[in-house]
Length: 379
Image (tube, rainbow, N blue to C red; front, side, top):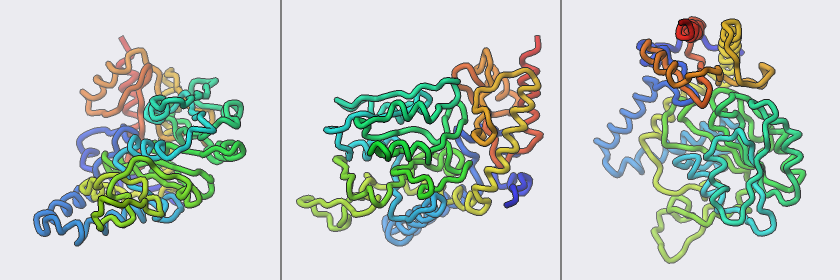
């Protein structure tokens, strides 16, 4: 495995010639390849009109489904295409039986979307597993929270506000030992760290192209383990979930036998195309190689920040750190605006500047953002 050379890829992403872009955990850079795919979509629309659905677009949906399945080490029939993580969670949440078990175990560091789904359901108890260090959650804490009342453990693979990577295989073992489902929000993981849903033995895994997969907003991929699909019958539905989708029979409904039963309305075809462009690049570079490159940039960024006197909120060991670096700052919004004026794009979360390099970034860009943080701090 060889880490990708950023100089080989930088021309593929026009923003990199204009800005120092270090915000891939919010939105991956737009590639020329993704842009070309969107143009292809427009050309098909001009040429075929509505028949483009049957001529080409359905085929491209299945191409993307297959690529995502390959990245996750699973089969295409276990992948649902939804519009967002919220939509995926809503469909999944509607399929669960809360009668005998009504506890959902989450982490206090999880992104709110993951928690809101269960908070609004009558009779569901949400148990938040605390963080002892403000950056990670000890699996032993999960073990304390999981019991015979637990219906599902629903948590993040990578925490959005600390970058810490969770051991989802270990958590899945804890969940399954108690007879609970293991549901993983992997939106901040896919594209920057390798994911193998079979090896990790998770039941449901969600992620999408907005961030590290370089495909833009409007999609979420949901893996559902084959053994679980028949057990989970949603109580919300759409025509793409129907077994006889093109029968157009509104007097009879049966769900598909595969993960597509969790799909709702017509897919956002233009975003399917954009996501394909980004996914092609990810597949070509390879996620293990991306992980190697991003880890090197991350450790350099942390080392430079600490040497300059900044505090980092994150996991203690490099193996548990992703390419999301949280730098403590007294005025994160102000410094992000200051950096933007200088062509450096990062983000902020409460009390921190969030910096997220990807494989197309350089060491010089990592150094520059720390130099500018130091310059802002000086009177």
